[in-house]
Length: 372
Image 1 (cartoon, rainbow, N blue to C red):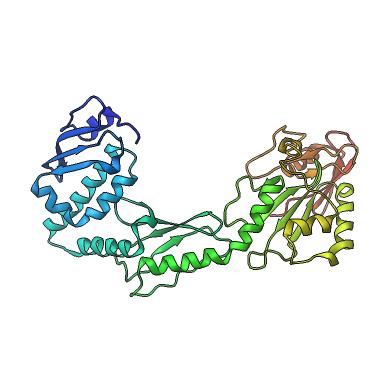
Image 2: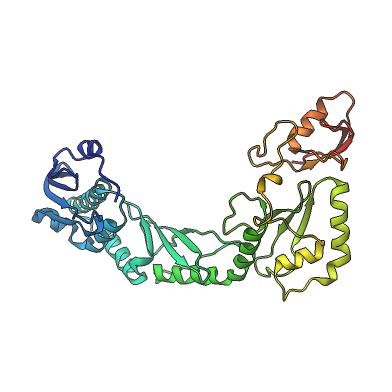
């Protein structure tokens, strides 16, 4: 457990007095809607907040008695005593406000949501916010990958469909009725995750056995991978998540001279693609290459800096425009080289193509303009 920040505790709960030198035992009062309630929390020698004992007066106990499961869950998940007491204070304040307004709807909403969480299983819940309007549930697939579904609950739950956020390679539509519960949403989510197991297995093989230049940190929704073939050539793959072993869309990046042999190999070997084999094995046969990997090379060999700004990454752009002369092969950000060529009196432009000289070796260079 993260140790308590005594200054933070003093600022938030000045009437809770520390009772030991380790700052794990507090006794005193907490304020709820401008009323003071006796409260004590004591963390045992194990230093586990989940094993803490909580005592309070009968008035506070009455306010939070219907939320024992939530409170126990937050004891397991909160970082420290301060954050836990804040959440308990929030629960009690909400209940007291509802009692004062004589409107049971909010209490009924919380009780129903808690009932649905219990039906789903508390062990699957990894986060719930203080207002009970956002919760995150976890699913571990058969490949031991963690998947999170974020659900945003409205005040009319379950009459209104919760909004959800998931990381999947295709759109996820939650099917919901007024009779639906959280467990129904979870079943739909896990079924969707399981349907993409082969896709993630394929992408994992690529991520493990090649140098992926883009994206830098792939998410579960990413269908693209830019893989290094050599210091001057890479291929961007777009994999179909519903048919991950099928021939992916391939886009080669590099100078025309450098990528010409790879393109020829692809055209010659395309009939050899066999969906019974792995995607990586098929790609190496198709392109007649052996992809560099972490076992035989370093990523720095393929992360070439731009010859103009001397940086690798410029916002979302990386150096993928290469000098046409194979003896040079210097890479540039497309934005950098276009600005450079436009500034030269000797450069000329025809439609969406600009012609000029390489900033590095001064050989003739042709660059396609960025079309927005």
